[in-house]
Image 1 (cartoon, helix red, strand yellow):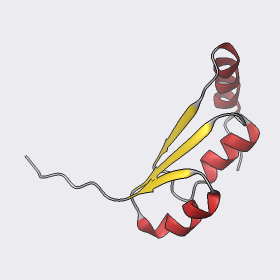
Image 2: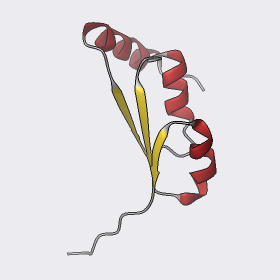
Image 3: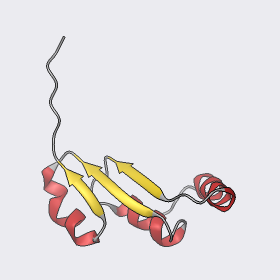
Image 4: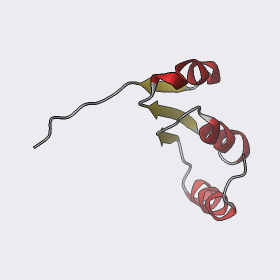
Length: 77
């Protein structure tokens, strides 16, 4: 997976000025984006992934990162 070069430059500069301790990946899917960010850009950052679709459960569990899988329902109106 290729990380957007501008996003990578931005995150590196922010992390250098004030370390990024946690990244929340909302809509993590299979966790590929978060794992790539951790590996390539923010190796000292903790990752927490959120995914609503339980089909991704085994893949997220295999990452070793914190994650939450579930669905939130709201009542219309």
